[in-house]
Amino acid sequence: MGLFDRIRRVVSANLNDLVNKAEDPEKMLEQAILEMQEDLVQLRQGVAQAIAAQKRTEKQYNDAQNEINKWQRNAQLALQKGDENLARQALERKKTFTDTGNALKSSLDQQTVQVETLKRNLIQLESKISEAKTKKEMLKARITAAKAQEQLQGMVRGMNTSGAMAAFERMEDKVLMQEARAQSAAELTGTNLETQFAKLEGSSDVDDELAALKAQMLPGGSPNQPQLPQQTTAPKSNNNEVVDAELDSLRKQLDQM
Figure 1 (tube, rainbow, N blue to C red):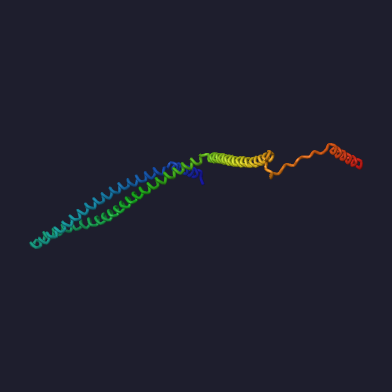
Figure 2: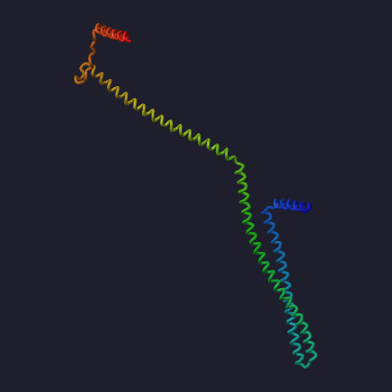
């Protein structure tokens, strides 16, 4: 590949890229509709001109037919009057208009076909323009939706989602801790109440027993109540003997070791 061919391709590629970037779909659709409408105006003008030419040719053809019929009658009249020369001239004029009429008939047939073709093209172009307008509105709606979606995606990409989620997680942890503290406080409150009621029940039993003991010790207490055992005091000498005996026993154990 030559150098100039490579340069030409690079320049063409760059130009195509610039054109593609510069193309606005919405504006391009509007421009396409405008161009089609301009074509429609020109086609309508062409159809109108073709129909006018057809009408003119048709009138000329009808006039030629009238002349042919007139000179045919003139030729018959001249023969009836016995003027053969005049009848010949009338037939010559008839032939001239017949040739003209045949040429006009051929032209009229061509113009009729052309007008019918132009009319069909006009109807097709009008239908295409109507369809293009409908598609344009649909494409504009799709373009608007695509731009909105692209803008939304850009906003989503620009958002600090990780930081936001971390903040949500921190708030959730705080709520869980607060709920746990509230539950613990409720449990502690319930435990304290149970403990206080247990103390009340225990103190009630002790108070009852203390009251019963006081009643027994009062004079004139019930004889059925059990009496406290009387304490007996052992003689002091007996206590000394017991202690001395234990000391002797310990000495003997030490001597045997």
